[in-house]
Length: 427
Ligand SMILES: Cc1cc2nc3c(=O)[nH]c(=O)nc-3n(C[C@H](O)[C@H](O)[C@H](O)COP(=O)(O)OP(=O)(O)OC[C@H]3O[C@@H](n4cnc5c(N)ncnc54)[C@H](O)[C@@H]3O)c2cc1C
Image (cartoon, rainbow, N blue to C red; front, top):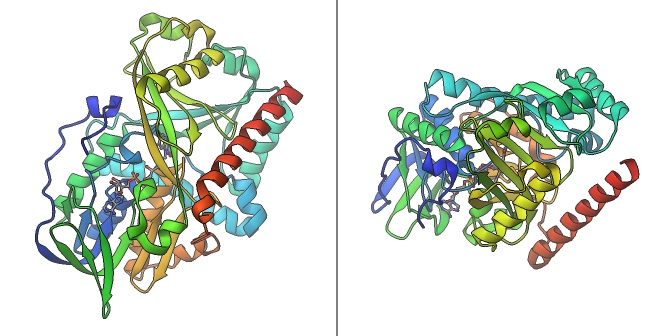
């Protein structure tokens, strides 16, 4: 399948051509999937002296990692309140700190590996769509007191100075978060892995795998890899070849559009370099790229069928509902991508059986979590830490089998209704 046409692919650094696997290879660790999770795991393993092979069914960062919103912030797809409720404060704090470490992995890799074209910019602002001063302040206090994380409060006038819409009220600013060009980041990681001795094969889908003693054998259409450890990082794009892991997540589609250049008119919309999102479960998220274009993401569905024009119209309607001043703006690009979601909204991260690891299902919050996930698995493979054990309560939750998609859509619809009711009651 060819590379999707997105703003990222149109502005990417040159993409190296990589061969398909057509031989029988050996390595220490074979990684399935060259998204941010697989690439980070491979880099961390290579840096620890492991011989690594990555197989991707398509290309490096062809999946969600090369076409997302580009926002890197602490947290998981599941909210910290729900994690705390399930696991208690101490465990929730450890997981939160790991998610923040994921942000640092990205930031440090950009600098230390001198990755080009990543264009990191600081800051996110998460806004309320209804008046809730006390709730926002309470959230900031909780994050400081219980999770040791500092956020800034923005009152409604401060939010509206930055985002010119009456739809928004108070906001939470995170100056430590960043947004960037995720495709260029992944392409840079791939080169760094190869420089460290790792090998990457594209258009090399894992069709099946089996054990031979302690070894695992992965087969593709024209070759095979024999390895000691096997790591599944297939995101929302894997299939039955992942065996029991394929029953522990659901592919969920989400969408991004890009406006034409707005020139000075961008200042009538946004006057901030931060990435914005609202705090609904099905949130709008957006940021300015190239100085005067809006890259706008939102919506989730269980099907990924919309054509480009329908997508553009759908997201433009969302955009205009927040910023009526954008009514006459053209959408120049629209694309979709799949995320892997477990029903508990936490990753499948850890040991599936001896020497076989899961590092996947990062949902809509995968840039930091896929990064820490890759590191945690590398540490576990090398016997350096048992941090993966922290994710055991979430590993391999059943996805609802043949009813999974129906179940996911029902959950999604009910969340949308809850957002709507909450806004009407408070607004
Ligand atoms: C439109 C969109 C916007 C998003 N915005 C954000 C955001 O702003 N911030 C954020 O943190 N997260 C965001 N996310 C989520 C984030 O992008 C993902 O969680 C993350 O990129 C997942 O990374 P991954 O490595 O697990 O999977 P992917 O990047 O999807 O990579 C999986 C790879 O596995 C390969 N593969 C699958 N099966 C096989 C097989 N059998 N053999 C070989 N290869 C295989 C695929 O070809 C693919 O390249 C967004 C996602 C989307 C789709």
